[in-house]
Image 1 (spheres, rainbow, N blue to C red):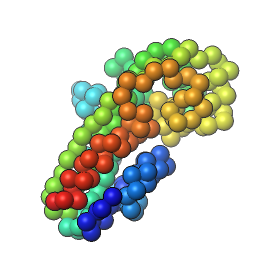
Image 2 (cartoon, one colour):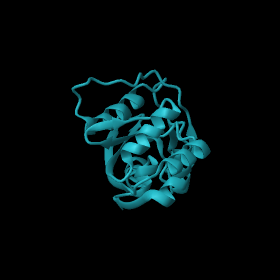
Image 3 (cartoon, helix red, strand yellow):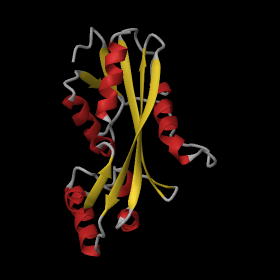
Image 4 (cartoon, rainbow, N blue to C red):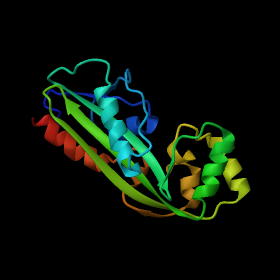
Length: 195
């Protein structure tokens, strides 16, 4: 991808986002220094939360951007029955989340904010419906003990063992469920590199 002299900064610690952005053949640096505190009002409609978090991360970046710099921030949310399933804080919480997702369809929403040093900014979202097969206790225990999905919203990674054995249907982008809708990121980066 021809960046036309632009420098891309990815403000994310996620190994999945690093891998997916690399997959676009984009040269980038990672810088996660940020002043943003992730919280939101209880009356915020849940589908709006990822965009709110993504924009907050962008504007919480620790320094002003240079004119030739483009910053990418992102936030992914798992939503089931209007309940947000965040990153599990314990093994028990991970077990509970996977029991809740078992045999059901949930929604994954990822928001991405792209902002440059010239004042251009765009936030966009992608939505994917994910259907899980029924999981038994031993499958849930095996996955959690082997893969330790404590850094993942909803306590699972679609690209891991559980995705192979339990996800029966996807309506939308697979990469969005990984946390980065690369097809949309690519299209927006092309626009930003031309500005």
